[in-house]
Image (cartoon, rainbow, N blue to C red; front, side, top):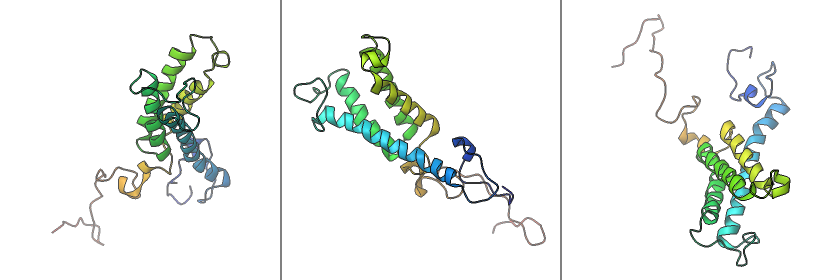
Length: 185
């Protein structure tokens, strides 16, 4: 930018070139809003799968007469627990990168252990959802939560620095109007 200040929006990170003005363009604002919206929708839908399997709501667990996965049954119950807790934390933007890695890994496991044995391609073995969720959560882990997340709340970070609260770089020494250092009393 021409005024020497840095933009709070990392435009190049999201593939949006920064213009000459200090105001973000419509494309930049849309890119800034897209990641949190994508994260919330993916996390919510993932949590719905977990709630369906654990509590028998929303149509229940697929392929189960009771609609509920038996308590602590490996790997179904644990996968449903990861879906519910991980999807909720990703949607909220709380410990997003860690939760997204766990969710991605669980879907990678589901694809290779459950679906891959039936056929090679996801369209043949019914593993499209597992493959997509695996890559969706890997993308969220790589990009982070975006600007609208619990992790981005003001009490979690120092204002204007982007550093976690209590971890700031030391300020430059104060100087008098004559340029000499001022010692604190």
